[in-house]
Picture 1 (tube, one colour):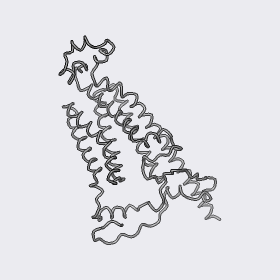
Picture 2 (cartoon, one colour):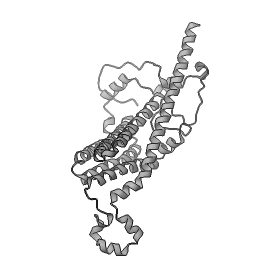
Picture 3 (tube, helix red, strand yellow):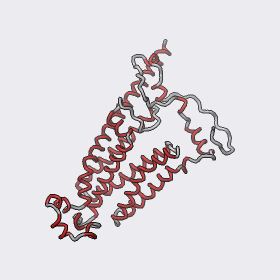
Length: 310
């Protein structure tokens, strides 16, 4: 059923236009030497699903029976933005408040997708809101870390650049090839990205450990004298450090002599590095897809020009 809209001058039906998605679906005979290979689980959308911008804008303005802005997962997304803003406000002055609010914002990232699927409220707006929130909060945290660890500032700036550029070019390549979602990656495009995006547990572990690594760096830098685990809260509430030293084997005591941010950073470091490798793969694969689309469009333009001359 078509959505109910408020009274307004009718919007003309979208006119047919030629896009990159159309060209990808062009029969191979029209593309000369370039052949289109059908793939199982192809991510290309039918041409009928492409919506004109003005038509979409009018529909979003006049529809009254369904408000995508107020979908439950999008409300969770707004709460993530608020929590991230609170964490950034307290980042210079109150590490504990920053840690709690930033952590809640990250954990809610795993909840909004589950809620969207449970209530049938998945939306492109929600997917982009989720991605933008992730990119911006991570970038702000890395900016703060570059000031805390000045000798590593170039590394943090590189990580910000890689994160933004890889996701932007991946999103853009998904759009020009007619993908319904940037997470729809087939195994013949990249097996690494296919494993990363098509298993929600894998995606959560990589994203969570990546964020936790940087949060641990923040907590380690925020404490002037980081307490070892055996003397820190809540261990110190239950047992005296001297009694714990007598009961604990030397190898384990050595681990407990470090602070929990240090231990957390060490444990999350391999996953964080793997996440950066995935970003590099994502950037490279998306670049090659865009080049392929360019080649298809240029070949089609030559075919059209040859047809006009003949």
